[in-house]
Each structure stands twice: as structure tokens, then as C-alpha cells.
Amino acid sequence: MDARRPPTAAGKVMAILDAFAPGDVRLTLSEICRRAGLPPSTGHRLVGELTAGGFLERTPDDGTYRIGTRLWRIGSRAPAVSGLRELALPHMEDLYEATHDNVQLAVLRDGRALFVERLRGRRSVPVVTVVGSDLPLHATGAGKVLLAYAPAAVREAVLAAPLTRHTPTTLTDSGELRRDLAATRRRGYAVTRDEMTAGASSVGVPVRDRDGEVVAALSLVARTRGSDPRRLLPPLATAARALSRDLAVHWDAGAAALRQDAVFTPDPLDSASEPDAE
Figure 1 (cartoon, rainbow, N blue to C red):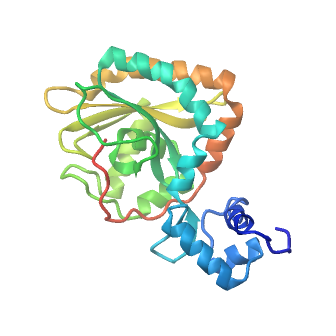
Figure 2 (cartoon, rainbow, N blue to C red):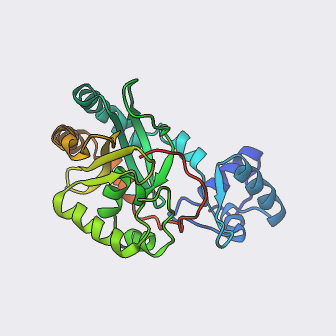
Figure 3 (tube, one colour):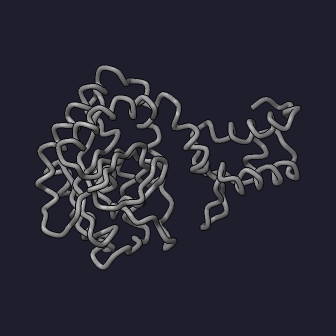
């Protein structure tokens, strides 16, 4: 960072956000001020305003700061995510026409499943997942896929943290979840039944880049009653393979960016309420 202090208010804000550019997911206030070239009083005020606006988040365990979800939502318009969404939408639309169930696309972000696109119809089971929302990895079909194929450090951090119970059937035992993730890798898909929302089940499959690395998860959410979510696997797997082929041809830069996000260390999952969705 240039030793000169940024001369304008906008420059100071950009310097604060740029302090996270080296890839450090968490910084203390003093580290932010030092990297941004700001005096502590100015840094404290601006960081507070950015946190209040959702552009930064203060972690509850040690008081460090990280990039906030609101900033990510703005950044989702960048090619790394917008390119993924553009390539995925035709396949998601075909999948919806074949199943008439909720279709969702998620990526790994800070130990959470961040939903970057979704399709839902009037006959689909109600969900409140919206583009830009994030949900826990251990209780969602897409999340289990992302966790199963995540870097080992990310997976172990999630397994070591408290696992929030959202319904009576949510997996909250780390050993049981570890076995479930191993089964997901072995068979190539994840299944949930009433684990995030009572009455809703899901099946998720990996989406891969040209190198075979998992960069996203595609999932379907259906009503639990009277159905087996695995019946949705054939059309879902077909859509994921087709999307993976498109990514291999058209999406090298975006894949690299999402793989970098996947190495972020997740925060412990707390007991705060989550939106009801699978």
C-alpha cells in the first residue's frame, strides 16, 4: 500500500477495502489502518460506517473484520459470478421444465453456501432462498456438495465448529456429518430430508471446471412428503454435466476466482436464525 494517505473520502474507503486484497479473510482494525495508510481515528470511523452498511462484517469471536455480504452482492455482477450465472441459466431453465421443482446454484464462500441463482415456480415447494443469500453447508443439499469437495482445511474447520440445528433431523454430530460427506463424494451427490426446513428435501450435485475441480453446486428442492429426492437425480446430473462442459470451454478466469474463494477459512456456525430453505 502507498505510504501516502488517501486524499479523498472515496479514496479512504477504497483503501480500506483494498486492505483485504492480499487474500486475508480477517483483519484487525489496526491492520486495516496500517494497510490503508489511515490514522486510527479515521479508520475506526470509516470501518464502523462500512460495517453498519453491510460492506464489512465484524466477527463475533475475536472482533476482526472481513468483507461483508452486501459488498459480495455488488461484486457478484463481476465476470467470475455473472459468467457462471449466464452459462447456468439455460440449463437451469431446462431442468425446471423437466421437474417443476426449485432449481438452485450455489458457490462456496467463507464457509457458507452462497446462492448465486435460483428458479422457482408456483407449484414448487415454498423456499425463501434469494440470489445473494447464504445458508449453512451442513444442512442444505448444495451446501453438502460444496463441503464434501471443499479443501480439507475448510471442511475440517466446519466440522470442528458447532453445527446449528435447524430442524429435528439436521445433522449436528460431526462424526455423522463426516460420514455423510464421505458418502457424497463416493456416490457423487448429496441428499437432505427436512434438514433445513421441515417438509422440504433436496438433492445436489457438483459442477466442475475444465480441470475437474468443483466450483459450484446445482440442486433441486422438492416436497418431502410422498417423494424421494433421488428421483430427481437423472435430470439434475444431466444438467450439471452440460453446465460443466460449458464452463470448461468458456469460463477459465471465473473458475480460478471461485477456487480462490474456496480456500477461505469459515467462521464457526453460530445459533443465529437462518432463512428457511434447503
